[in-house]
Length: 389
Length: 177
Image (cartoon, rainbow over the protein chains, first blue to last red):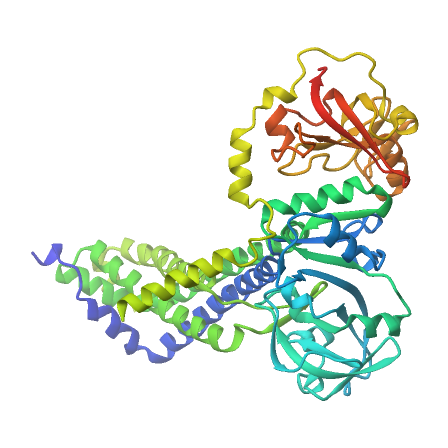
């Protein structure tokens, strides 16, 4: 009867507390491995979310045909928004207001109070129709910028490499030879706009001595009408315009960052792999020190399979505890941390996918890490093992 | 109380659906219904029409509003199709467009910015229109079974303006190969 029984559940748990320092060290090691996995997955998810959240299926970006996909290099006539609104069917209108946003977009060197060297920032000249088209943008604090003022996204500090205090309301930033006072602070549901500075279009055009625009963002009644803008641009070749749905534009950027994401997944696999080897090493140490104990259990009549299961249980419990601690650290300290990249900045995202991957890796560490040393220990004859020192 | 809530919900939904509807064009569901009711055969020509001219020649000689038969190859840009509309870019049959970055032979142009002006001179937009002159709201690949690089002959009317814009309003398409 005894031979067919499993070891009691609390036997494995008690064993963990029997060697507290060893257990604590193993727990720290496993936590670090799982946390590393969580951070890398958080990086991938944050980048994906930032680009996905920026593209709306109803919005079309109209920019210069000659600028390829680089909106910063685009220059289109200032009359383009009015022409589009008048010529294309399906442009969203409400209460007589057309959802057409003329914009000037540039990357420029920006000085803040504490920056000795200017940071490379993104500035968008906008009118009050911009929030109608970019629905995710919300003024979180302060006021819409007036002449000589700007409002900043919540990740601008990360993009510029400066402190949040430097970009507080009332502070000043300098770019293109003009000093601008910060009037407000906005959020944009995790999209790329959060790493931009928005200035009044007319003021920015004056500062830059430009009358043209970089692009026009048009919100359509439905995604079906996006094709009508494309049709207009191909029909009016004299305007040299190109229309791309905002979703396609950012999907193309997602493709551009595919190698980075692939590399990050490889890092996840490597970290998990190294974690398994570290776990194996730890578990070898743990099992080798318990050869006599395991042999005694066999002598008492417990089957090898039952003892093996207990060892896996111990390792898995420890790995899962490590995963819990890692997830807690991740949610408190890593989630929302800003990361700078070429297109702006984005926030690391510890979401259900990241937590699932981390827990999966932890379970793998527990099971795969415990099996080989346990199997090795079980192979020793009981009589020999019981005499082991 | 329950009745008041229901009435409020009804009013809210009526308001939500009616707001801005006065000027709104066909919605996506209306477009889908339109697409389902379109007889594609009316836009397919059983026989090749006579007197077809190339895109380059038509750009020079065609007059606004005059009947025109145009021959060319579907292409001339990275994406010759207009998604969800019976419209595509037609390239003069004598020209060949290669992908940006590829080696170019004599007479070949690429899809990059360097050849933008040359491309404009030898391409035109073809819009398949109904009897009212409205573009057919179905993707031309779906409506006519067209593929990129197909050599087609289109019959219709030329639309030209003083700014150099030239569009073919097609009433029928014949696929030569």
